[in-house]
Image (cartoon, rainbow over the protein chains, first blue to last red):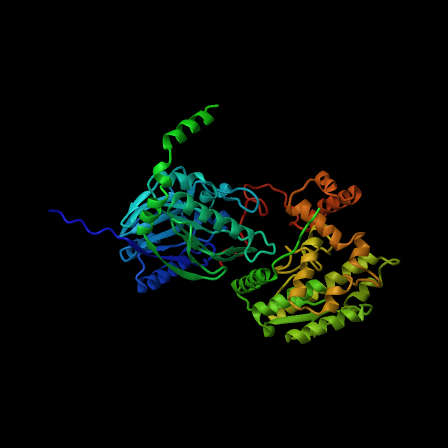
Length: 290
Length: 274
């Protein structure tokens, strides 16, 4: 009789809330390896780095010069893929495809394999943002299997739209990994910036609406006058905040994800069970064909 | 219409001291220099720089002209004593008088600009001597209205207060316990006797900040501002003043000839590689 390994019910997760050097991939890689070493000490299972953690954010004309490929013969990814034998990793980078299109990308690495690569779909190109000028739009939203269960990765603006998290949810993801390099803006009398409040509220809403875990890894530091506010969070399927990183400071934020929480929440609140996907498809089809 | 420009001073303080530290250190420096006029804007920048870098790492430079208001010097000294940083006082009189003496008639604007640019020369020279970056002191109101001298008082290496309206500078300065005498006096460039900002501008900072907040931050159209209760003449005057001073806020245009031109498609942050 085949004995299957017992399913992993708890994930020791950590968020690498780091600052980066703008355009210096080697320096950033060294930082990744140092944080990975630290996380290993604390028996971390999954370590999530922010958006563009290997490159910095406001790259502009640096984009083509900092691109790499998530393969084991790539000089940058080689050591990260090696390191993933000890713990699963999500890292942010600029991906150059075979046709030399550049994407804001995140890779899930585990056990020496590149399990998933997500290309940022929504590229903000308004106000202070100019991503559409330098990058290609991703064109896929896909959940993927890990040894902990089915997950999805989204990058910053991707989760400023309700559709990608919704699609990942329908595609089977019970843990959504959000990575960002979010510039802080909106100073009023509140103790946090408006952009902080907005993101925390929607992360909580997604956790609640999808009865799923939401993990948000945001960077810190400055690039010219732009500040990155950190404040990484983890929300549980009840919409409760179970971890919160400091604002404006580097930190390794550890959180235990108890997967049994999904069972308990969905037994009480079966929103997933009751979601009428055929109706959605029908109505969306009707609306878009008008 | 209720327009509230209030800020959270603790949050502003965290972000702006972080900004100063980051921008100075990544450029390979550990120190700053600042032109301390005795006014509220340079007072605020100075206090933030001291908090970010430590008092021993900030050089305060007072640069009086023979006809400067003695209060300016005194107020600057009050701050220097409060913060405990090194300081210098360098008279600009002998630097500018040879030029000023050649000017016809009263020539207030020319005189004022010469003085502002002379101060720029001195502060950038001190920057080299002290090995500290020049921390700017222009606030958002004066930047938008163009109430500054190009390559004069607006020249700096980094500006921590350029996204704060004068109204917010006042609130922030109070929260940081900058001496009341500095906060409460009428803002003045002190380039000639009796000069005040509000006298020159023709309106108060309190009024114009409320309007700028709607026009700029909230993207109200001029018509929407008039509808919100502002005088039409005032709105049109301010709108035109913002537009006509854009040249003070951008690099001079370079004529494009090649496929890659600085200012158009040679795009890198100042923090490139750091």
